[in-house]
Amino acid sequence: MKILPLALAQFIASYAATNMNVAISTIADDLGTTITGVQTTITLFTLVMAALMVPGSKLTDIWGRRRCFVLGLTIYGAGALLAALAPGPGLLLVGYALLEGIGSALMIPPIYILVTALAKDSTARARGFGIVSGAGGLGAAAGPLLGGLITSAFSWRASFGLQVLVVLTIIVLARNLPRTAPEGGRFDGIGAILSGAGLFLLVLGVLRTNVNGWQTTTWLLIGAGVVVLALFGVHISRAKNPLCDPKLFKDRTSNLGLGTQLIQWLVLQGTFFVLSVHLQQEQHLSAIETGVALLPATVGMLVTSALAGRFARKYAQPTLIRVGFVLTIFGTLQQPVGLFLLGAGIGIMLTASVNVVQSRWPDEDQADVSGVSRAMSNLGSSFGTALVGSVLLGAGHPYRAALTLLVLFSTAGLVLALFIRSDGEPRRG
Image 1: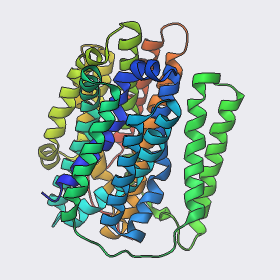
Image 2: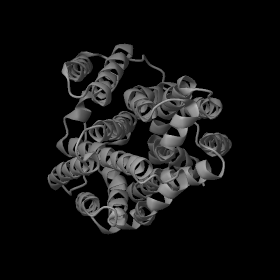
Image 3: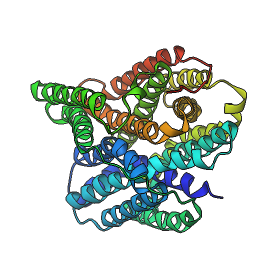
């Protein structure tokens, strides 16, 4: 039962990242904004999480795991309540993108660290990661369907109200989580600013393609982001108390696992976004009809997420990642009949990639690697929505072009997975 609040927290954070897609048109009409405006809010939510995930992970050690987890839930719940009551797009952005994003960055890193603390051995840890990752996949998959049902039966605001209720439940359940004494220490403010600013500029540059296309301003923003992230790399290699240990970026297996995580969430968010927009704008389906149309993908993710623990015990993690990418590619190419394969493929990969990265490092590095891992996943989500959104505004056949782009990314993920070793031995030192 102790793992239940952790799984629920991961579920609600993943649900928040996908449930708005089916209500894009409804929200835009209700708040007097545009599809691009709502897309910007969705992208900023995942961007804020990505930018603050590593600092949030470090604060987990400084403030204590359970305290950081509950604080994150409280901020998240306040953001959901504000979004539910928002009279316009401005407060929706503050509540959903900023407060929920900040809350997620504080509550998600402790989830994976606490799973490690609760596990008695490597088998129990793999099972715990499977449950939590499966809950994340379930939340992402259930987002379109559940969001569509709630939006059609009540309103899009009720979906945020549901999040408030779930968060309150998690806070009550969190009383059973183990207390850990804060380790204290200095917080690397410079590193936090550099990492956050670099990620923000990078994704903002991609997001600007929805307005300006791939023009000079876009490339300047992307270039600035790359430069700032390079400065972050230099800083943590020299700092006495770095935001995260630079050795985390020097392990080949871990880096490949992080790369597959980024691509998986890019494909997941990008696919749900492009299909949701296509079904609502071109096929003129309602929110509930869009959710039902995406049901095969939801079922595929539910089935494979539920079997994640069994798969992890029976097959090597790199093998699961490779199979997942193959299924995802075939599913994307066979739209709309391939939705089940697409969902099944993504569901298979999510837990396996987390296991590859988290299990690669010893206990004392779990806080740092958890933050980096979650940052990569949320960065992928941001890229998925931003890149696909820019393609959908193009001429010709934007729907086909967007799906083709997602297939290319899935193929790149498969190539990365081919180089991941199956030894599974943790790196020491």
